[in-house]
Image (cartoon, rainbow, N blue to C red; front, side, top):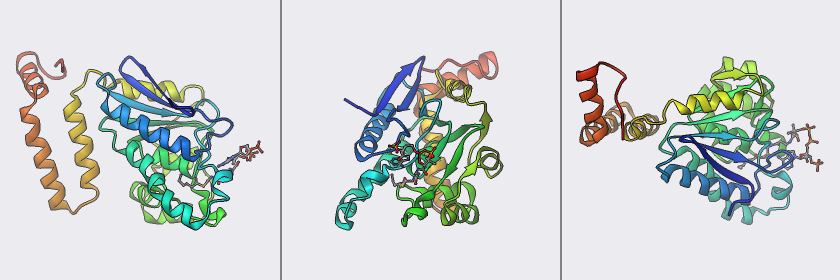
Length: 257
Ligand code: HXC
């Protein structure tokens, strides 16, 4: 039973709620719970897409610094795998995922948002990787996912300085994809996720896998990944339904299983 992370499913959309007042600081227990709930969201057939949300005030202010402050080097060596695992589990959800960000998304909190496909932010959002100010660096994927998303120069500026990026700048550099008033950002994210309810789940999984795995390899290998995913979909009922419906009724009217 999770204490700090909750999965709520409504009309085909799963919301992963971050619930650890005051700042949703991600202690080790919460990181583990987030990883487990991400695996559950991936596996459940009643979830078509996933929203990650920290509530109206704050997304997450990062790893729990008070917990980390007393860890020895040896203790961190044995924990470090788990620290990367929870964002990896989130990124591995084979369905469309979106973060709805209000207030601070810092350090591990920003890394949670980076592990989803898309980010909608409130106009009061502040994102950043302030780990450098603690004498460390991002450890839950930030150095890798941030630079892949916004490019190495902008990522290095953010990581080297630890500065907070406001909503307008985050939108301008592609760190977030849309801005909304704080009290609307969750509803807008749910609306985005709802588009995929009743969609072709295997094709969505294949599309996400091809993009994400392709980003990790050279072009030719990426094209091989695409070819395997593309041809594999010809064995699915959704492909039969999609193409038959197009031929008989025109575009966009297919019902998928
Ligand atoms: C533990 C935290 C916390 C955190 C805030 N708090 N962030 N506790 N870990 N990351 C606590 C404060 O101690 C305080 O507790 C309460 O939340 C409110 O915070 P304030 O600082 O009083 O509020 P405010 O002035 O509004 O500033 C908010 C803030 C600031 C900008 C978010 O708290 C801040 O800079 N926090 C640290 C952010 C950070 O460095 N994140 C990166 C962590 S390292 P009390 O009890 O006094 O009310 C990291 C590594 C990732 O994430 C590795 C993998 C997971």
